[in-house]
Amino acid sequence: MDRIPILRMGNFLLVTIQVDMHDQLALTLQDDLTSAISKNGSRGVLIDISSLEIVDSFIGRMLANISAMARILDAQTVLVGMQPAVAITLVELGMSMPGVKTALNVEAGMELLRELVKAHHLETGDDDDSQI
Amino acid sequence: MMTTLKSESLPLRSSADVVTLRQKVRSWTAELKFSLVDQTKMITASSELGRNTVSHGGGGKCLMEVISNDIRSGLKLTFEDQGPGIPDIELALKDGYSTGSGMGLGLSGSKRLVNEFQIASKPGEGTRVTVVRWK
Image 1 (cartoon, helix red, strand yellow):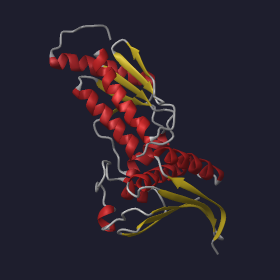
Image 2 (cartoon, rainbow over the protein chains, first blue to last red; image 1 turned 45 degrees about the vertical axis):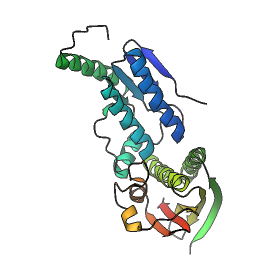
Image 3 (cartoon, rainbow over the protein chains, first blue to last red; image 1 turned 90 degrees about the vertical axis):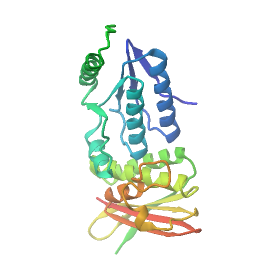
Image 4 (cartoon, rainbow over the protein chains, first blue to last red; image 1 turned 90 degrees about the horizontal axis):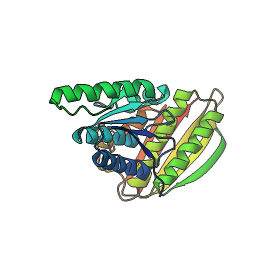
């Protein structure tokens, strides 16, 4: 069965979605990512969707789910690279993806992720100062 | 007068068929010289309605047609299934109403993404949804 690769970089997980996903592939990614967060103790997840030509309500819900599940597993998620036409369509469709953090590109997304994880550590008084 | 310039019927049995439909809608709307935003809207609508046909209608088909009148041309999609049908269409068209596990945005959301939207359904006989997006 095909899968979307998940790359590990320190405390972060990186995912680039480059294929037109059928529904099962999207669900598999959701499962794989949550398992990977738990297995690696990851603090952040960056999802690059710059190659995605559409995000419909199913894929949108999957992305929102990943973000919510990651939060429960003590990890932050940032979605990057959404194409303008996709953003316009998503909002018109009625999905505003509340609770999902976004950034314009991978670079800005990594920066936001570092800040989020840092802020979260301070907030929870977590003295684990492992390298991010 | 309305004429059909091109047509093709696609089976919708699995979520892989929905991916094929999306790709076909992309290439047809590009051929019609839709703007990128309009292409994206039509592909997204086709994905929502195609998924409905597969998951709620128990499978069916989509008829794709390039149509033209004297003034303009556009893409018309007709989704048909022989599934359980929709007992209350008005309710099904409400944002957030869902019988499945989705967001309840499939019908109401895709209606906002197209120029024309028609739905006919009889409980026990099936559902037909027709959408048009003009260039």
